[in-house]
Length: 422
Ligand SMILES: Nc1ncnc2c1ncn2[C@@H]1O[C@H](COP(=O)(O)OP(=O)(O)O[C@H]2O[C@H](CO)[C@@H](O)[C@H](O)[C@H]2O)[C@@H](O)[C@H]1O
Image (cartoon, rainbow, N blue to C red):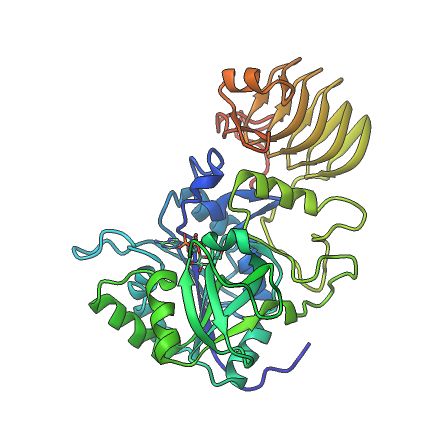
């Protein structure tokens, strides 16, 4: 790992207010950063772990849409003993003054929280999204920012031309300095050295602290509320704004078989599901196991999973899950799932506290938490029948069951107030 060039003090705003409407029904009751991911994480854990592993530990999480589940998760998973840290992750809701009843956009959310900078007096402010699956050593971006004496640095990577309308698209010169920034254009020019792809913002920015304050005050005067639509296009004309090439980021402990520069937006149900398949296999393209760059999550104290006979192939099992005499392939089951005898589960993501009844057959499906699947049920075999049962079926043929009854737990113990807290 490199030495930090100076001793820049960095604080972070993590933008966690997004609705994630394309992830419905998974975001019907929670914001996108709170959506579970993998065998034990929430999406927000990736950015928070990246910041924590990069020694950035003054983190404010700006929330807005359906924040309750996210707040609970932060309280349970990210509360550090005051003995070790005065400040760690603090959740910041909109301040609800007469003037501001909610955050108008990402820039407005930071504008309303500018007073939090007074306490820390940072040199640099990181404004990062909370919606992505990736590992990143942010210190390397800080070093790049300082070496270029940048006012703003935007983390960037190439995206296929047919996806430019989902991203902020950047034009740079050979030094990496940004001369054009267009938020979600219908079309864009390809990169000079790659005719199939355009250079896109990852939604992660570093700002010189005093400059951020000035830029947001000016944006506020102009009634401009969004980094991508307003602040960055304007600053790229008047200030030193650079693109940090994410493909140069080296994360310690990355295995040779992993995809270089792995980063996924998981913006739709189909891409969210595909990212789950990326963590499976003997050589996954994104390996959850990396002791040099851990992804932190809840402090669940339950026991390991238990398999009492079964035909399992390429499966991740969460803690306290029980499988009895079932067939499971290419799937992730999170914690406290119960799979009864004769059940068949293929290409599925089964979230926490779900019970799969005896003889049920599930294929290419996501089952949100707290669902009880009755014995003999078939899901993913006949999409007409799935729709008739009220399930969501995506264009890609993925069947998604929304959150079940939150009072239902597949395993005994909760009903009398027992069980493990996360
Ligand atoms: N009012 C609010 N308060 C607090 N948090 C909020 C918020 N509104 C959204 N957020 C959060 O801010 C981040 C950015 O979300 P946006 O919906 O503004 O932009 P989007 O992700 O589409 O594009 C952005 O991210 C892509 C990369 O995915 C870039 O290419 C693009 O330029 C950039 O605008 C997300 O983490 C979201 O959860």
